[in-house]
Image (tube, rainbow, N blue to C red; front, top):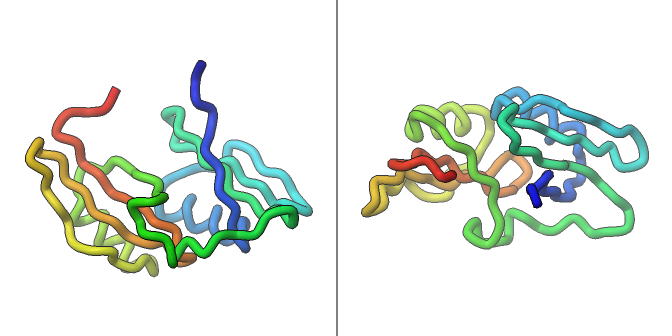
Length: 127
């Protein structure tokens, strides 16, 4: 089997998708209009995030969740510069950059709607 996507419900999928495209470099692979305004966002390398709103579910209070409970991680070559760029784009810091004993670097942020985003630079790429 191959993972196809991960999904999360938001209040305003159009705004969230637009921000993720503009600031995280994703592109819209597919979108569905009303009533869910679903957006499948792709990183171009196989990673897909579905962002939608469905009246059948309550959107969680992501901002109240610990970022280690649920987050989406993005690989970057420069954790510090990417962190600052996203802070300038209305993200909120969730701590400072941490370097792990194995050489990985990571930091947590919150997108403008409170969902946790992790930036990661791996010493050795995940396979």
